[in-house]
Length: 242
Image (cartoon, rainbow, N blue to C red; front, side):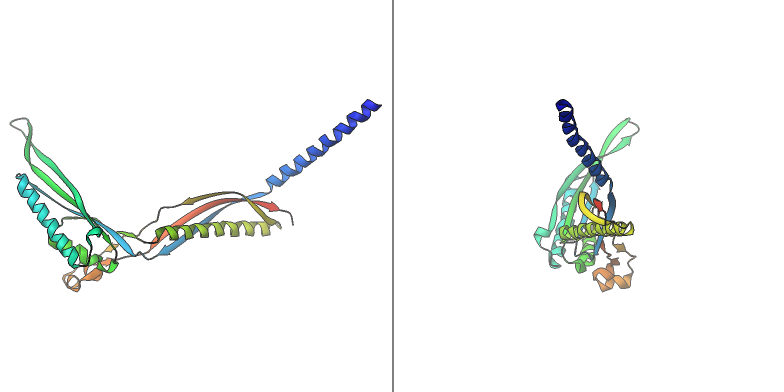
């Protein structure tokens, strides 16, 4: 009898532990997983302008001098518009031989040299963007990409989009919990992702003669849009009984 009582006494904690495990498993199944999205749009306040000049000639010294002359002319015009030297990078230079196929010799023949200079301009005042592009063309710049619009507080704005995404996830989870007559419990898991800012492509409208005379962005036919910062989160909350 003593042995039987001792065995029964040991089995009680095992039964209680099994019950607690079942209840804990049930609690873990009462969870909701939601996605949250956040977006903030702001007007750009600066731009990055990439341009360059390239020419080909049989005389290397002559083509180098021609390209450098164009760069110097642009730098002079840029300073006249208020740009500082630290806003302009004109150090990118490349020299490449140009070949043509000689049918008689059945081989490539050196035809000349292509000399290129790349220029990157950090435009701090968007209202000067059109004038900078016009002066660059007048100086002899023959390569230009569409301006890359930016914002000086991009990191802070991206964080704001992330906050909006977290709030959206919480609001969605709360709505689902209330719909199911339950309460939203603590957060169990959170995954966040930030999307790269999506800058608008500036509208480069056709430039008429009368518009060019106006100067500025309107004269160059430039209209900027809004920068879009987006973030997403996935959150897992516990659902509590009322």
